[in-house]
Length: 78
Image (cartoon, rainbow, N blue to C red; front, side):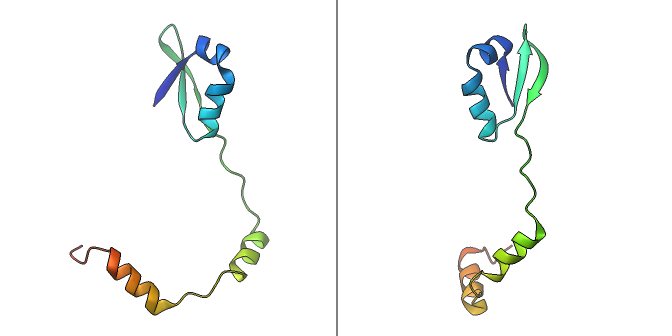
């Protein structure tokens, strides 16, 4: 996990927060000692009704084509 000093956080807060928004977790240090962590906020939950609506609009799966594609990319020795 990368770290950032309090000074760097103060002077370059926007840049640091863009890194966090991009998925990084950063340890904030003061005098070289860790004092806090900055981490992204977990994503918001999607309501079940929205998920069901999206699911109903998915294209049908061609099972034989899917199986053929999977066999082509998977290692049969596993």
